[in-house]
Length: 299
Ligand code: BEZ
Ligand code: FE
Image 1 (cartoon, rainbow, N blue to C red):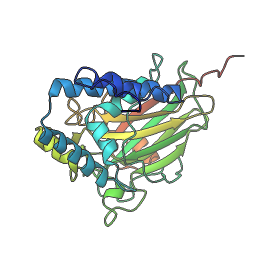
Image 2: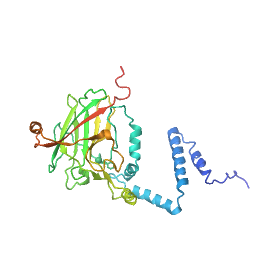
Image 3: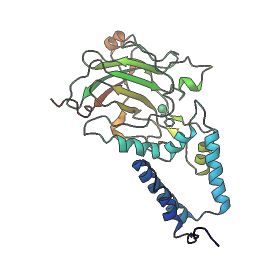
Image 4: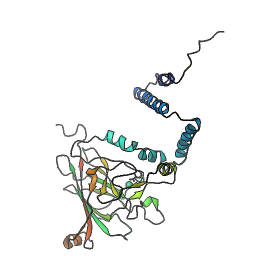
């Protein structure tokens, strides 16, 4: 017989090295390194689980269904990464903050439409059936310097736990959203409603996973923020409502105690009048602290 010699048979103990080596000629060194790590850890997990053929097929079916659930407005793979804690882990790795800076947390799937540009003091609640809540705040640098002209992008669920995009037949597009620019003192203010806790979407494979594992799908009540300012690193974060259910068991592992704020009933007729609110009113005050951009400020 002619031709090249057959390689030694691969078995349970040698297939991992062979699979890693198959990527040895990947020109991009980062891709090569990541694939090697992925293959080694995946093989280690499979070796530890020892799945049956049927179990492996079930796993593949689950991932297939996850892909089928994705479209332009639904990203089931991101949701899977969220409930496995991977989105939160990636966020934490990429935003190791200096002390004092506002901690980052997951973007989530509902930042899918552009927030309407709004004037300071405007209401982001275009429905007006729940008790109004005043949100005041400031964007500052880590040394406390106010940041005028900073962008504050806000989005939130309503008092029933729905984003505008989830109930397009009932909620006007843009309600619960606003894009504000801070004043000369770095301050922003708007009125809204206190958001409710809500379930992440459960009508897909991720929902079935939660059900099969006796996990609830809820996120504690929160308002999303993205703050941006010249010369500073933007922060994507949430502010959580202090007395919300599920603060200790967020379905997507995004709660940090530094991001929890009191939303309290305030009795201040003069302030209520100034903001066009009935007295008493709900109020939360929020400071968003940005780190300098790398290389910024070094003169
Ligand atoms: C959200 O807070 O909007 C969210 C984050 C992760 C998964 C689902 C929703
Ligand atoms: Fe949310």
